[in-house]
Image (cartoon, rainbow, N blue to C red; front, side, top):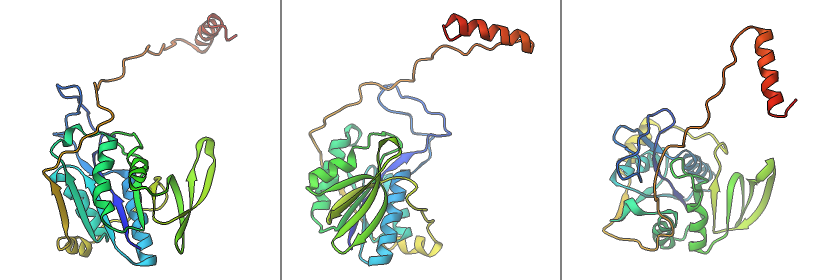
Length: 253
């Protein structure tokens, strides 16, 4: 089985100070640490597990700057076959649709049985690239997949629905699935894998411009501060009395 996996290099912002630059359209990235997008890491692991069962090749695709080679090399060290980095001239102005367009062109050139992406990126959070890519490729898809079972020329998948429900679909290959976090346990790259990755190919596609953006970032800003919490001080009886008065005043008692 030949599998394409789309991955993204993203900044880790959970425990970092995030500042907005002077254009008010981007964050300042100088002091941030970058890594593979979390959901994409699960998609990569799912591809590696399928490769171990069915053999075949895994090709990694990413749209990003030269530094994105870091996440491709990590995937190669884990067991992927080769990688493709796409760096258009208008990289800073891309939206989900144009990223999907850039990915669709090289993926169309190969006869992949399966295309996997993460269900969401931790930086943009749009969940649009995967499903848009499936439409551009003209293949069926399922999103938020939490389990996959290969059956000859089809795959039975379970996916998360709203309200805690699950859905099950049987889809013929070729197909595209966006993978939910938690579907597996991503592995670490071995020292031998890191050494082997240096010998694997990363194809670079540059000096192109993609058009057709559907959206643009108008402005980034911090959420406005809301009302501060009111701290009730005093003894138990005093605080209880104040709380009752507040609840009465709001019509809750």
